[in-house]
Length: 244
Image 1 (tube, rainbow, N blue to C red):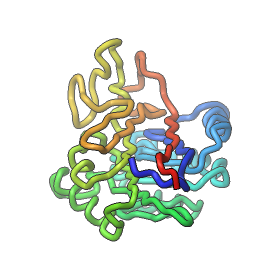
Image 2 (spheres, helix red, strand yellow):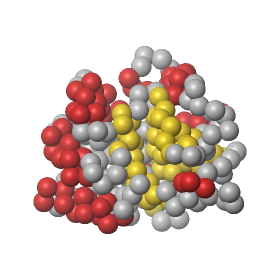
Image 3 (cartoon, rainbow, N blue to C red):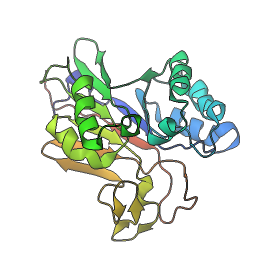
Image 4 (cartoon, rainbow, N blue to C red):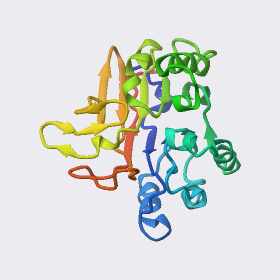
């Protein structure tokens, strides 16, 4: 891992698949937990809203309560796209200071920098999913030096091979809802795009030097029940091995 010393102990809080859910009055439970974590950045990896019970203002209120805690970085999920209201969603987030990453990257840092990139959910395109992801990643990191440490927000975890091909160091995904029902010793039962007994539903996965962090998510969509599968806030703290 090529994490610059400048980013040693840089703390990322990941919120994924909120699906217009509510945790406490005015989402106070979720907001207070995030504040207590004192993040340097907050990543939202898609399905911020739910296409079946769309309540944008309710979910935007989470951002309003946390917008001065840390910078927000956001990518779409399939539910944003399915509302056919995705441009309004992005516009409202941008007005609140959120970095909406649409197949693009931002360089952050001072004397040392890292790249934070994000790609749109493949549902936004008529291209085959693999082709779309390859092209979106090419656009997102087009002007990023090869040697720079790269983080990626991408809703779908099972495209790991594409992320690895682009030498992405650290990927944040969601979408799988932890497999909805988790069977002790076996893992998740079913996930969109992966079917029964999916491989990528939670935790950290490593392949060819790339690491994939998968959030089990916070909310539910079509299936309203979780079993052995608590909603989660993911926290990742970067550690540098540099002695500079």
